[in-house]
Image (cartoon, rainbow over all chains, first blue to last red; front, side, top):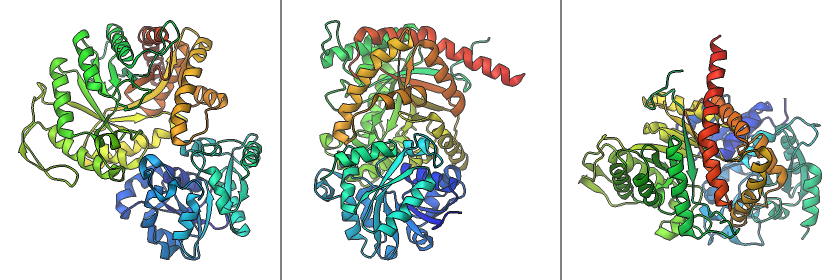
Amino acid sequence: MPANKTLAILGAGKLGVVLTQLALRAGYDVYIAGSGSADKIALSIQVLTPGAIATTAEDAVAHADIVILALPLGKYRTIPADKLRGKLVIDAMNYWWEVDGRESEFADPMTSSSEIVQDYLVGARVVKALSHMGYHHLLDESRPAGTPGRKAIAIAGDNDTDNQTVAALVNNLGFDPVIIGPLARGKILEPGHELFGAHVDKKSLLTIAAKNED
Amino acid sequence: MATKKKTDQSYISFGLDSFGDIPRGTDGKLLTHAAAIRQVIDEAVLADKLGIDTIALGEHHREDFAISSPEMVLAAIASKTKNIKLASGVTVLSSDDPVRVFERFSTLDAVSNGRAQVILGRGSFTESFPLFGYDLRDYEILFEEKIELFAELLKEKPVTWSGTKRASLDKADVYPKTESGHLETFVGVGGSPQSVIRAAKYGFPLMLAIIGGAPERFVPYVDLYKHAAQEFGTSSDMIGMHSPGFIADTDEEAVKIAWPAHKTNFDRIGRTRGWPPITREHFDYEVSNGSLYIGSPETVARKIAKSIKTLGVNRFDLVYGGGPMPASARLHMVELYGTKVIPRVRELLAEQSGDASK
């Protein structure tokens, strides 16, 4: 049984569903919420991720040891920030200009989107992870620890204990965790950077990360 | 073996999909957009002669694809063909007008003697939004409202409708009506659960766009569609999939032609979306385990048969000619698909169902 065994996944789209599938397989309890009421996603969850509990964002968060953000980044202000105070929050979202627009606050090339999310989520501890690998690679390439060629997931966060907690989760989900530094460093995982879309092993990930030192 | 009628749901239909990628001429240079469109027409004429069931053309509004008005090209194909179904793939309904879409496709249905088919989608490209004056922030509501209106229009009776993103209609009657009373309409989805449920809600046949990763991951989506259809009391008989691929005489030849074209295509799109360039390792993975149907007729037929069986679909459309390929190689591919791959897939599926009944 994993530590921090209850997850809240906010976002019931492609990424949210895949993360829920991986988490259930790893033995986590998962509460998942879409953008509205629980019954809107109840059928999808029952069929695609049997065992997960479809609920509202507020309710999911109240149960959770770790909250994972898997909604469209442009909707981050719909996250119930006050309910996330004190929580460990994994930001798996990405700025997608085609939907979020070029004029967006996220278009700033110097600031990582996770820092903007952290500013909004006052009192929460935001760690950037599970954001750079495409959702179908996440599903296809999850492997038990020790499997040769196992793929790696980068983690960027400001607090070492939190980074370690996220690393344990990433490992349980089927990937080698690689802590690349503080939250701001997560910029190198975002669209337009070499690690965005990367589904490579730990060694390759470290090599690419080193090449992209500021 | 008795020939199955095409209206029978156990009949597996095979199609070709194109976005009007720009091929290379014999001199190695890219054709003009106009010539690329004529190339697609030639390919569709050949496909019709070979008995391929559908040609589906998708709209884009960018330099690397020549087709922005699929139904214009389909109308040209209609005048030169007899049996092939003429589909869009997809019509980006969010940035179009449902009334005009109905009018254009019911007109296509008229000129083709009932061969028109619409595949509605949200599209994975969004250039059409600024081009036609739509706000990307309305991405979801635009599709939601317009599919609702389109479902009403398909009844071919006066429509009364109101929404927030388009002028209301009060007993509006829209022409031409189709002779069959039914303009065939699919919904194309890329794996968003809500889109699958929406298709079931309106009783639209489902077209799964499976463009990367193992096709098995879509099995739960097929289940979701069936469950949802049951709940809404609609039909879930027709489920199709579309995936990219390329066929040549041998596996080596197919990869030799497809890899550079695919890489050019993928990397160009990746530059605007922030993906890194595709690696040969990733390409090979997609060919062997993922969703690229590239190889000799035997290799591609086996892969298609496996996907059809795994997902339980009754329609497979191959997105062909991705990237700047030699025009002659594309035409040869259509020939191989019609003469070798499709008959071989049918044979493999019949063998497997024969085995199962023993």
